[in-house]
Image (cartoon, rainbow, N blue to C red; front, top):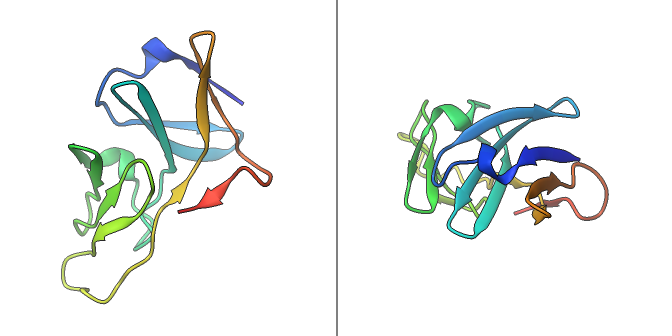
Length: 111
């Protein structure tokens, strides 16, 4: 599914959008476009409302830190050091200046 032109994703900006009924977080990091399901695996807060720091996103609710490229939880939520659940990545690619996402099927993966 087409998410829009590459210019719609400014470098380093957390962009929250809905595609095919699915909330996504999309961010452009240099030449790489990353996408995660826009839901923290801890308490389902919207990651797009969080803060980007280098190649990570910090959840706005309890501060969990997830890697934007892999979805891996780098730091657990505050007060829950044992909680470790990764975010769900969404495969994306750029074709002719447009950003495309695979929203279903075997190409979709859990990081």
